[in-house]
Length: 220
Image 1 (cartoon, one colour):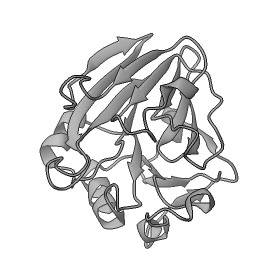
Image 2 (cartoon, rainbow, N blue to C red):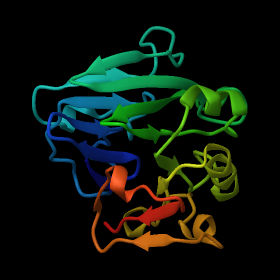
Image 3 (cartoon, rainbow, N blue to C red):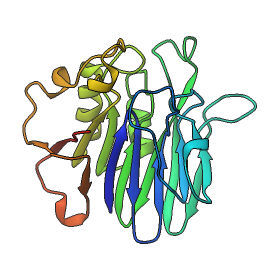
Image 4 (tube, rainbow, N blue to C red):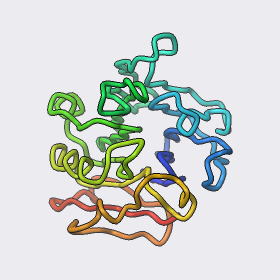
């Protein structure tokens, strides 16, 4: 499968059968606008920089992590064209959602490779959440702090989950210099096996998963 970062917490995951787009952002977010088509769009929570499904092209199915009425994270377990999607409830802050509400972690089993998108996780990942997620091959994790977990808490989540590939997201870049989030540097400090891409795309299959954890840093 191909993994492409569009900026912020938005990725395109392409397989021969299915194109998945995570957490689309709207026009007010200063990354290049989303012009992608998809079959499935996942929404970790209902904030404008994560739920702008109107910018996505095509005839797609939306999988929302929060219940539309209660705004509580729901436990989704659904299969679309051979890809299993399940959610693990979490909070958008470290005060049990009192500040920013709830957030859904999306876990996707794609051709035997498990991809976990943590959305705007704002609390320390618990062992029970990690157990519910299961073995994670590719971890898409926020690291910028302020709105989400910071670099230190993200490192703790990585240590708990022990993924094969870690892809940091939701951090300060040239597009978001005015935002109160941190750059990726603190998260990368002391990390081994950091793979820096010239572009925003990589290919993942069973052969790319090694015994040694890799950190993939995309350019955009």
